[in-house]
Structures are given as structure tokens and as C-alpha cells.
Length: 298
Image (cartoon, rainbow, N blue to C red; front, side, top):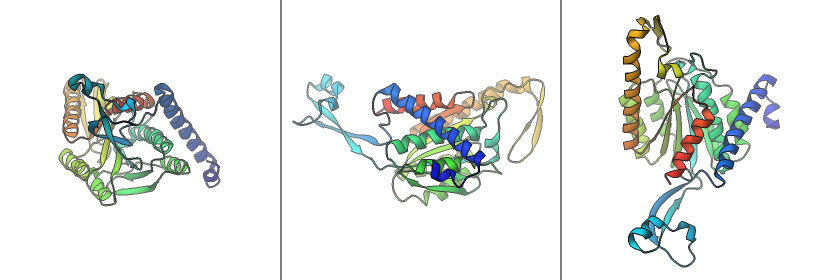
């Protein structure tokens, strides 16, 4: 961290230190809680069964298969130890919103990204950073060396929102950059046209990439806690509409719930991980729950 701090203003260096400490606390707590290598599923994928042979590790025996066949089989895994990860962050203006939480949606995405970057570098997997609004913006090429972490943290602390978003177009542009199978970790509120977005994500998955969509919404965008006459303003267009909060609340909540359920169904069918989050959930707890659920699937 010292080498990077030599070129930074003191307040920015302090921000990076805080972000680095948060990321380490999340990852170390996760590792200590498991007492084992936690990240199977990012680095290793199940391939097929084969008969147990002398010299195989007994720990790899599939006891469910034995119970069904009374024969010993081991799970064969396809190693992907050099899987390249990309943190892909939405910088559209809507990501700057917070109603009463300490973190905006962008802040929340930054904290998640820092922890994931730390975790991948701990495994010696290359990880990079890409940001977008209507097109791709700042990027950090993927590396696995330890100096990559302060480089990514430095970039994360500089991120600012601006303007509209073109998620589908940006993903298409990003896809053309990829030269081999990658893990794509998308952080966005997904306030965009649904069908083009789903099509772009499916195209990436069809190309062989592993994708996790972290759908980050503000607490108020999920619970709609407003009272009385309120004006809802689109942060990207500036257009507003006055409504009665009590009249709109039930329909709004139902619409959001339906949208999230539809995204989960559509993405799951395409073998894309969908992780709905809102900013009232502590990001470290939310990330740990997701990583544990992913680990248990492999």
C-alpha cells in the first residue's frame, strides 16, 4: 500500500486504507468461519463421476452415489485455477441514490467489489475492474499479484456517478474485450431496458463466461417507506411525477417483487447467478451468505 500512497492525496489514501481494512475483515471472517478453502465454484467446477481407483483421495468419494449403486465413485473436477475475474460496476446517476442509509448504491457496490477483489487475489486468481454508464469507462486490467489490490482500491475510491446508462451496449462492448473464459461480477441497480439486458447477459454466458449479477437497490426502492404526497424523480432524466404514497405503495412493492422474481427466474434458467441486495443489508453479511450458498452447490 505504501508505494501507491506516495502518489495520492492524504484524504484519498485514508479512504483506500479504510476500504482495504473493510475488505480484509469480510474475507478473514469468512475464511475463519469455514475452516477450509471457501471459494470452490469460482476456481473449480464439477465435471463428472468416475470409478474410484487406488491412489484417489477417499475424501472425494461421492457417498450419495455409493448409497444408490454400492460402488465407489469419485467426483472429477475440472480445474480452473487461473480463472480471470472482472468487477463490472454501473456508474449511472441512479447508483448515487440513498434515502436514509449511510451507503449509496454505488458505495455499497464499491464495498462488495473490494471484498471480492481481496478474496480473488488471496486465491491468486487474476482480477480486474471495468466501469460503465452509456459506454465503458475506467478499467484496470486483471492481475493476480498482490500489488493489484491497492491498484483496484485506488480506482474504486475515485468512482463517481454521471448520466444515463446503456447496460446492454456496455456489456456487448465489454464482451469484445474478453479473450478467454472469465468470471464477470456485475454490480448494478438494473434500472434499464429488461430484454436487451437479458439478451446481453445470455450472450456472455453462451460464450462460456461465468456471471454473477449483484442487483443492488436502495432500501427505499424495495420497501417504499414514503408517506403523503411525494414526487418521484427519475435520477437519470430528471423528470418527476407527484403521487400519493399511500395509493402507490402496494402496487409499487408488487412491481418490484415481480421484477426481481422474473430476473431470478430468467437468469437462473441461463445458469447465471442472481443476487438481489438492498442497502439496509450489511454488505459483509450479504456477501458471506451468497458465497456460502455458492460454495454449498459445488
